[in-house]
Amino acid sequence: MNTVTITSKTDADGNMLAAVTYTETEILRFIEKAGQVDQLNFELRQVRQQVRDYFGELDYSNGETTIHRDSINELLVRIGSDKIRTKWTARVTIEATVSGYTAEDEDDATCCIQDDITIDIGSSADIEIDGIDVTDVEEEE
Image (cartoon, rainbow, N blue to C red; front, side, top):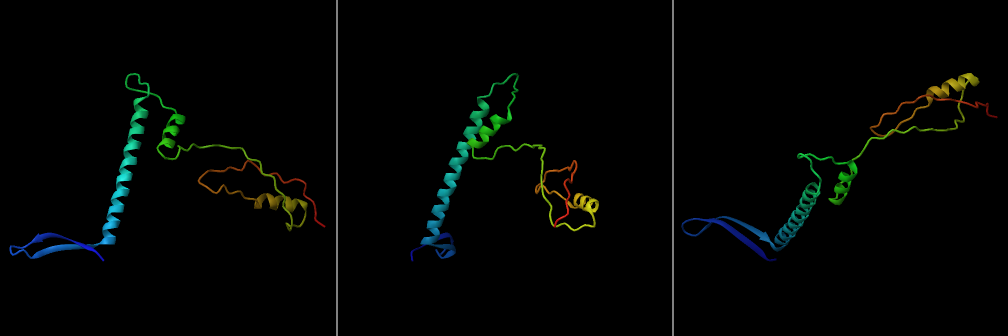
């Protein structure tokens, strides 16, 4: 296996005081990493250029401008970033059938089902239940 030794210091007699030896595989990895760094620097320069062009092309009045979310999102997509997320509100209707529920009578079943139904949005959003209507309660055969 080929190796490369780099000597950083020698004493007055020419003896090595500090030396590092690299294998051929290590050197090839360094070269590969250097290429990756060069590629990242190239991509960073492109992103900087796109951002500078974007802001340079805006119309300014007294040094100020208005930028709409859609325009910013277009820039973000061009530079490989995610769009700005916005908050949404929705009115949701859920229709369900509950079967096999054990209760003493129809009123008990209605009340207990209303109390036992829960809804989980599964994210950081807030959910408010405006009401739960239990209708058509029938005894199973």
